[in-house]
Image 1 (cartoon, rainbow, N blue to C red):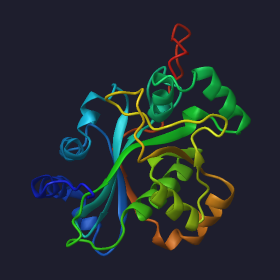
Image 2: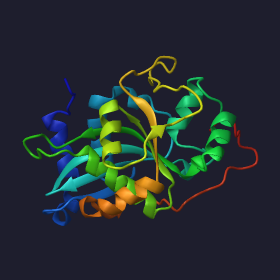
Image 3: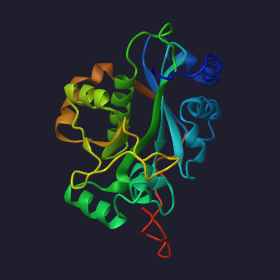
Image 4: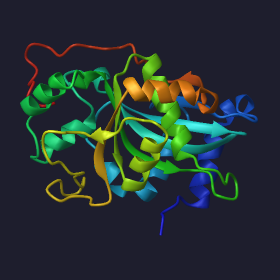
Length: 251
């Protein structure tokens, strides 16, 4: 059975975005809400109901991507923006692959160089879940949310989106025209459990959606269905280089 957040958490999240409600009537809109946003604590509490292990997430620069309509939050994702964090050269999802012993930082850097991608320019979606109930909004919410996030990353010069996807989602994105690959095409990798990185979460696969080629064509074709971006409560321009004393093995 698919897990859903409680009615109490849902109501709290809806209330927390009331400042945006007047801008969402009859249309999909999106926002990036950082820790200074009033909605951030409510989103964290809702997330903890479905992903209690996220309470132990290592510190870093995170934000919530939210898609709203008619004054409600429909879908949300916790995002990691690695270039915002001093010394973090890749999104948390790639850090997980190193932490779980599947890959080394050097192997990731070399593979992504061969793939023509810069790890520090990727965005990682750590969790994603529906907020609105089926009674509130019966239509699918994940695909419009990822569509909006991909378009947003294109506008902010990000080169791709990493996410832990199940096979159904991977197939849906491919059918919509997105390029979807494994986070590593040169090594067999799995989604590690946060509570025990040596064990695999068999329901998901670490995946990458590069923003290029067929994905750009799909974004153009689906532009009419892409949520309008209205707010960013985190400064994505604050890209800091690691100091010379920083341990670069911690990707």
